[in-house]
Image (spheres, rainbow, N blue to C red):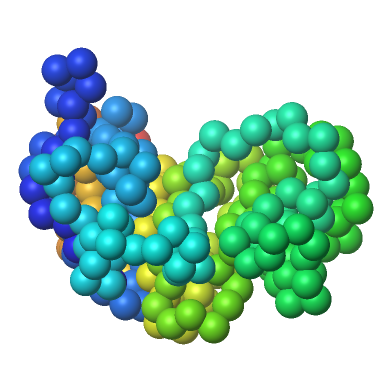
Length: 258
């Protein structure tokens, strides 16, 4: 689904990423984790074709992004960014409808309205669809933008790809799990998701594979049980931890502190 080799990025001669190899398969949820400044969001932006080096080739469905038709690509790939505008003088429904812009010229059609309602229901925002976006809390605004991304990829295209940069910011526990389950359901239909998270335990619970970064380099890239070990996590985060087994799903459970 997605493949990149030897990805590197520098800003004003300061190296942010060094020789990163990424392969993500159909139906896979890859979660990128690591300390602050590890290069997580930069890597996500590069994989999503928002930051580019001429030397770096990234393949989506075995084609570089330059080989894709822009409209066709918008039906197959979407990205949720952690920094969204907090001042948009529109209703919740209108902001979510932005995700449908690749599908109509001036007036939304019935399928566009249905896609938006479905996405707002999935993010628990349907009851607020006529509310002024600017009147919402930070967490509610976050969920509206997630609905916008979900609405964009509501189509019959096979093997779609979504990028999510810290989508759980400002969300309470219920909506964190609800959003992650929605993304998991998306990948279980043969689609792919690449996500940046800070919560290692949520990554362990939902990810198929985890990529752990530190200072722009890959420390580990494997299933959660292999990446999340006491030795690796304590060394990367420079903080002691204990690894237990989650009694609910048998995934690693990370407890920080002595």
